[in-house]
Image (tube, rainbow, N blue to C red):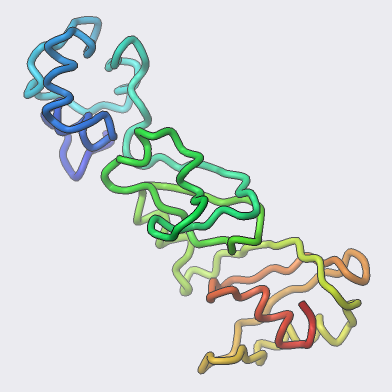
Length: 211
């Protein structure tokens, strides 16, 4: 049985507030207006206690629409170039592409790892901290694959250097774990890494005199 903040039974206003539907005052107003329907019955008491079940979205409707996904939601985004994986930086953020309500959930929706502002590709966003740690934790060695276009032709030497487990990045105090480089053509390759250091892929190619 899924739980919200470790609880199997919660107040309706607490549940909806945590899912971004507004403050408890807002939830109270919605209840009084008959906007909240649980098990086919209108709920006018925002403090009503709800038994959290796996079919919650089929039981609870807000303004005629199914309840948003419960905590543990995972989104896949094709991140565009120019968007930043941050909650605080100025400019376009990946969270700007989410429905407004989802940006006010508790726990907060966060990216699992990061892609650089000038990088596009698959990005996972979740409110599940345990899942995020499982994927990005350095001890778990989860593989991440990047398609890379470089300025100068690649050589077999680059494949060997990346695989060696001895490549040092400027400013780091320990070498990178071995990485797999598969050349598609002289200036394009797939690189598979199991770490997530700051700007790692760009810095790896810079370390061998490429970009």
